[in-house]
Image (cartoon, rainbow, N blue to C red; front, side):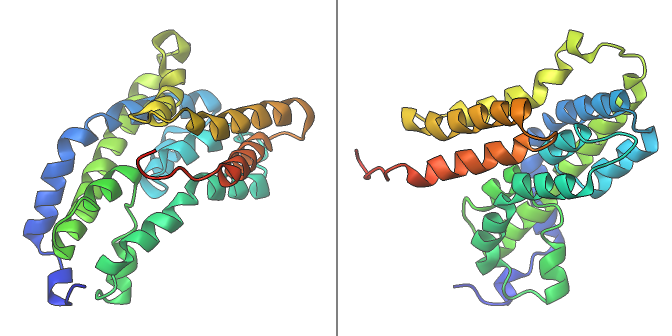
Length: 235
């Protein structure tokens, strides 16, 4: 339990969070560059690409959105896919709530605008609520800044890259997600939900209406994950 005074970050906490996240955030430039190039290839203008990165700030969801972009945009599938990809933020926000509960409502929700996997994970490692909030907000600013720098580089150089796959830019997000899947996990059973999601997505691409493969994969993977027996600690 924390008191209200301990929950209010100062400028020192925000600067500390920015500095702590800055080295890791440099890698985000590559993802931003890949998105900028992919967005231009998909037909977005430079202004639209920068606005999407600046206002949305959700890499995986933005890449998924590009698959639906065209002369007509299917709004309901777009909303559903975005919700499916970012549903984890509901759990992340709930887990962080004890460190936000003493803030005024406006500041509480404003603190979550730049919430992402990296700054949330680092903020949950420990310390006072003020220090954690400093990492969440200050670290979020570091990530957002490098994401925008990367997107800007992609916009600047993207028009000169006619075949992004030659540089592997089309595979960056897939490699990142694969690294998250493998990581330091030594339990082979973790591959079952991911395998089910992949098979369901491939089947949906072949037999279901367009743009439903992301939802089909998410539902299949989630169901298999729920049905897996829980491992006992120390097993």
